[in-house]
Amino acid sequence: MGNGSSKKIDALEQQQKALMKQNAELAQRMAEQQEAHKQQHEATIEQMARLLLALADSKNNETVIRNEKRDIEIEGTTYEVVQFVNRGGFGEIYKAKVKNKNMMVAIKVMKNTPGLQDEIKNEINFLRLTKRIPIDNHPIIEFYGSKLTNEGIFIAMELAACDLVTFWINKVSEGEAQEIIVIGIIIIIYTLRALAFLEKLSIIHGDIKPQNLVIVPSEQAFCIKLIDFGTVEKLSTLRAQLTVDATKSHTLFFASPEFLRRDSKNLMSRHLHKKSDAWAAGVMFYLLFCGGLPWKDQFEYENFCNDPNAKDVVVPEDGGYKMIIELLLKKNPDKRSSAGDTIMQLKAHPVFGKIVESLHKNFCPVDDVCDMKVPDDVRQGLSKLITKSTKIFEIRKYFWICVPFPS
Image 1 (cartoon, helix red, strand yellow):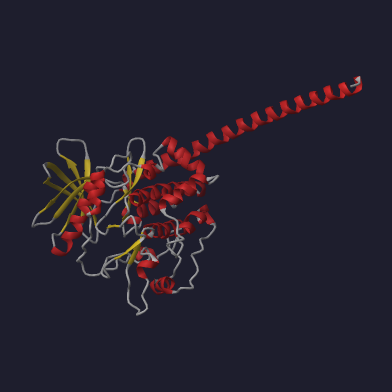
Image 2 (image 1 turned 60 degrees about the vertical axis):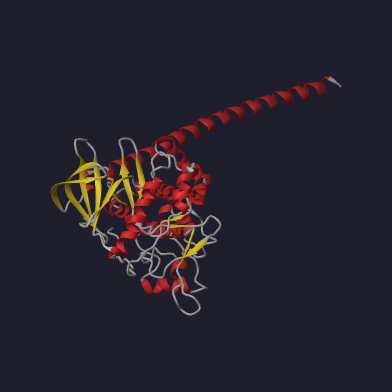
């Protein structure tokens, strides 16, 4: 080999080394920029999450109908009732303090009627069982005790700041656009976490709506939790759906198409699918983040449910929620995404995945419910859980779902 060829090889090697050095430096700069961007992104997510915590913990969320002063004993604990804060379709909610302790609770009080006893006992049994599942930031409202008397049914439970619809309308809707989007994603992620918890247990809540999800703040974090379990159903792990009583209570628009579909004789054939709660969550997200419902009235929605040619809901592009909500609003439940699967898709998404990672790192884990261990005795107890609803058929209509949100 001549000197000329050797020099050319040396020159090429030098160029290659220089190019490799440039590439390494460029890669280092890109890595540093990416890390800086990641840290900035995480700081933004953390800031929004802390803002959500601060808003939820605000005293302005409290609605006090009247002050109270009386004691009530439930399962050996004395509670000092201080305020009457809410009245719902099934009873009243009071704010109370554990006597001689700095701990506030909520006490749910209902009339003790034969038609309601089975549903309430079902709810109490469910709360007792799920309380024994060891998981941080438990997505089910914490249960402290209950008492059934001739005067009424009393349930002591964890005190929440407010439900999602109150929080969103009163606190978030007037914020900056970017803040609203990020807080909306945080709400979606932790709502899906709560539903994935139920999916892991093969439980269908049956009445998912903004009033049945509440924000519970703590000193450093917050948790979105599920309440009201009188309509829960236990699904066999070998089946995708079950048939329920025609008089089973539900909330219009949040009830899934398979629940409202009529048979060939034009009779209601009530079915709950393992992804029926996911459908309700999709409707809830559409309502909160798009400012209305996909259907103009009950007639249009029932036609949608019973029209075999009806197309899936198309979600507006605004807000960045389109992909998530459309996964949940597939009319065919077999094509619909479950809450757990939606969490996994969010984790794999180039944008949403960073939010999930940041929340997991700075606040509460997101996908821990997908791998949680359920004690055998809890599984056995849940397998015996049967809803025997003897109430008169009631479609719970809420006027707010037909009225646009304030701009």
